[in-house]
Length: 372
Image (tube, rainbow, N blue to C red; front, side, top):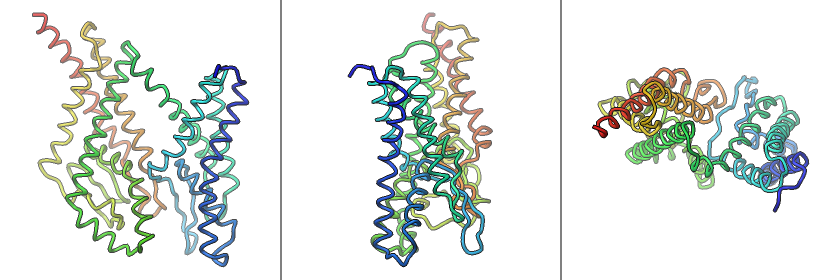
């Protein structure tokens, strides 16, 4: 279809469509669950509010909670990253239709992202109660950022074909993070399999019944990307926390009282030679991807610039992934779940930036020896 439709009307329409396709199914499931539980276990409004909170939490919106007994203050900003797949798929479809039908894609995309964020903010305001108060500003930015991420996924083929210094740096940074993600996934799976007995014990402790076990397993699977992101922070040397006062890093382990969640079965119990070597392996990987980030024809100054930029961009991506993966889980002891951003900068920053710069220098050395 040729691009001819008014971009602004189309943007609002697509934002409403995205809200309908993501919010309505959750509301229906929440209402059906309420009806099976029996009308005496709360009111229909509670089911609607609960569905809205689940929808907002699935977009990683900050919720302020007053937990019984005694209205204990808490926050919820931890979302299994698997939940983000659903709004991202819907928003990607909206962006795709905008690209095909809009006469001004960029202007329409701006309005689409702000409109979707505004609708999240409105739902946050309307669903607020004494027990849970979603943050409207957090909702707006969540909708804005998720829409832009969905739009960027449509540009991936163009990025892969792009040429030039900047595109080379971006692609090498993505390769760096992708390799780190793959290695972290492998490490997480191996660790979980090695502690499979502990995983079964945690299921036994929960005593959730057949349906409860299925639900817990589904949530754990949706949280696997969170675990992989935290493993990335572990490999970088920064480590991660599972509750206040805890730290799991290649160099030290301080485990406080850990919740009985099966996904945590593979948590490291200590450190050793292998864990100490993980950041070293990351250095070699960063050198390799830094090597791919520059062109041999450039001067040493510009090769170092591109190599360091490759490392800095990789660090930024690592931090952003961990921002999405961590957060507060109901407050209290679980107010800190995930990686510390300053620790990622402190431990991962030198590894990624120096590795990228060394890889850039290696290009010149190998090119010089090849010419000789």
